Image 1 (spheres, helix red, strand yellow):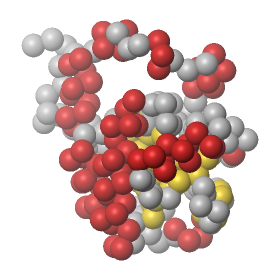
Image 2 (tube, one colour):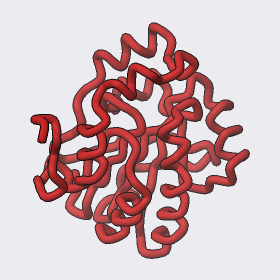
Image 3 (cartoon, one colour):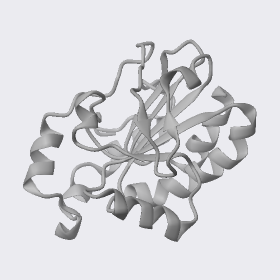
Image 4 (cartoon, one colour):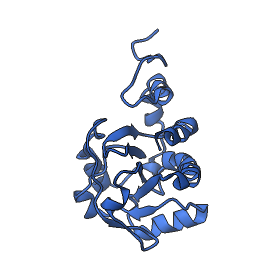
Length: 191
C-alpha cells in the first residue's frame, strides 16, 4: 500500500470519501493528460492562483445580493433560516458538465422542501452561460458571477465548487471538484 492511498474509512474534511480516495489513487498523472483546449486564459489562471481556499466547515457564509439570469434578485435575507446550496460552475468546465445534471435533479426534487440554490457561473460572458443552461434545460437558479461581483464574494480555488450553508448560516459542506452522483443526492439529507 502506497502512502498516497486513502482508505474509504478514513474521515475527510467534508465526509465525501470516495471522491477523495479516487483523487488520491489517480494522482497527478490524470491532470497532466488533460487536453490543452480545457485550459483557461492567462488572466483566469492568475486569478485562480490568488483564489481563497474553501471556507472552513462551521464558518459563517454570507452571499451578497446578485441578479439571476431570469431577472429575479437573490437577496441574502430570503435564504436566512434555510439550507442554501451555492454551486460555482462554467460552461467550459468538463467536470461541471458531469455534475450539473445531478444538481438539476437535486434542485427539482428538493426545492419544494425549502432548498435554496444559487448556481454561480464564471463564464467570460453571461450570454455563454445562459445559452448553456437553455440548451440543457437546466432550471436551477443561476447568476453570472462577474469579476466585479467576485470581489465581494470570491470563488474558492477549483471548479466546480459546491458549498452548503445550513439553517444556522454556517457551512456544513465544502467540496472542490466533481462530486459523485450519490454524493450530490446526499445533499438532500441536509435540507
